[in-house]
Amino acid sequence: MIAVIPAAGIGQRMGAALPKQYLECAGATLLDHTISALFAESRIQKIYIALQPDDHWFASSRYVGSEKVERVDGGDTRSASVLNALSVALATFSNDVLVAVHDAARPCLPPEVLRKLLDVAYEFPAQGALLAIPVRDTVKYVADTAALNVGNSSSVSSYGQLPIIARTLDRENIWLAQTPQVFRLGDLQRALVLAEQHGVGITDEASAMEARGIQPILVPGSRMVMKVTDPEDLELIEFYLSKLKRG
Ligand SMILES: Nc1ccn([C@@H]2O[C@H](COP(=O)(O)OP(=O)(O)OP(=O)(O)O)[C@@H](O)[C@H]2O)c(=O)n1
Ligand SMILES: C[C@](O)(CO)[C@H](O)COP(=O)(O)O
Image (cartoon, rainbow, N blue to C red; front, side, top):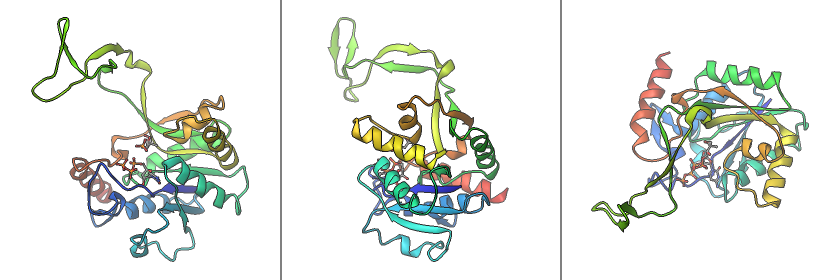
């Protein structure tokens, strides 16, 4: 099996001076933590890292020069970055090889969680599998209007326009998708190409497979596999990474 790490984002919501995957945390960059989690899993033979073509930060990674790690060009969107990496991988690996796609922005991936996901993916290669966690809070679907309605009137609060509730969703069947997401290389490449051709909005690999009628398996992940998105996440990820290192 192989892995792809989309790492070509700019980290706009983080607002840092460099892309968030290069921020230092618990002794390494977030990207190096992410690579190290996949590197340590013996079933993963090769890791493709999709980077902005003009990325000059990766040159300082401890994984530069490793035969198991290959840099490829990313694209304008996450799915374009993944697709570029899959196309490069297909020059070396066959359609039936499993590929685990894992966000650079999810640097904390406990080994036992990864192992469980890969075990399930090997059992059900045609369906594929991904990490996910069930929603714990009550889920509100918000109305289209952004205005705060008071009685029959519509007003803006002292904190600006706030959303209002349209309805409460039944959370019983709602899970939040994480990564890695594991599929057969050929299946995923075809699904992503078709999604692009048909203008299907894709925010993860499973969505592309779902659009082809596949029902991927959800493997319980962990809150530690959180996606680092804005500055508020940094303290928590540092805590999780340190906890993981301590074992
Ligand atoms: N053109 C892109 C955009 C995103 N990603 C990667 O996809 C993952 C998830 O994306 P996200 O967390 O949204 O990262 P950014 O796009 O960097 O963040 P932002 O949306 O705040 O700019 C990240 O590892 C990011 O580097 C990518 O490879 N190529
Ligand atoms: C793939 C993903 O991690 C699933 O939660 C996520 O969708 C990627 O983040 P984005 O902000 O939608 O690119």
